[in-house]
Length: 151
Image 1: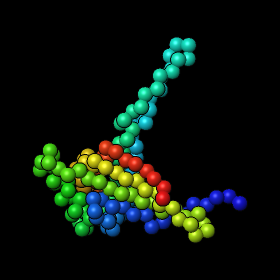
Image 2: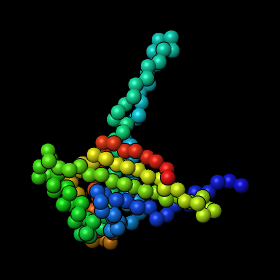
Image 3: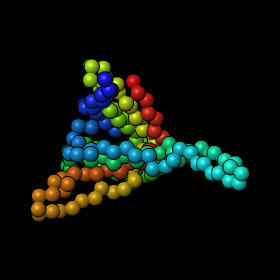
Image 4: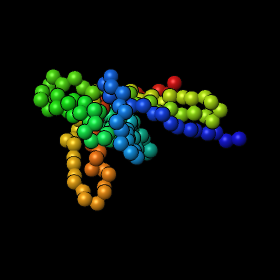
């Protein structure tokens, strides 16, 4: 018999706040834009390896309902960053992906994200043809260090 992986009831916490006003579709996407290592092969097959510390960074794209309490909280944190970058307490996040094996056992796939800063302003649009994305605020946060564990 093959293995199974069931997922549901994921949680996302920013600072000490559990986010509940999430939008639809892909509400949180955590990506790693940089490689963990560089490899270069030269003459006679000699190979050089170097750790790339930039590989620790991650980008979070987060979609919340526009005007919700979570949107107001995140906007206040963005404003803190804009007011005085040097004194800004960086954002931390915990992203927990719950997975089951089909027999009742559950694992928590936990991403601890540290040293976050807002990367972009919140964009907006107005649409007269029923585009639901106009009711969504999209935040872009970059973290300096992310650790993954399965518990």
